[in-house]
Image (tube, rainbow, N blue to C red; front, side, top):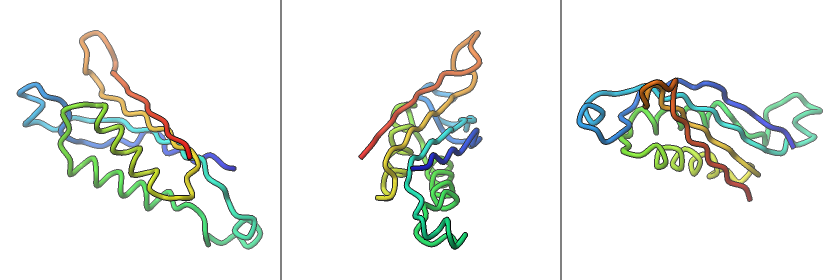
Length: 117
């Protein structure tokens, strides 16, 4: 097994339910950890055949977040986790989403969810 990490993916989206949050996009910071098997054939040949494509899933996450509107950080995090887990090669995934400046005196609020097969 190998662990792939997508670190500090910064995306703007609608997140929250306060009046100003419904009309103004905010930054969210996303970290994704994916546990997957890397076939020996891919390692021996140095070819991407049958490996998990982190670039493709990252593009899907970006589209989901940018095009969506979410009232709850929990829903956004779960939607990203579900998207990552769609690929059967993913044995385990963990997603953390930070909402910077969500609370006064705090750098951010984050939510983390994990799933495994």
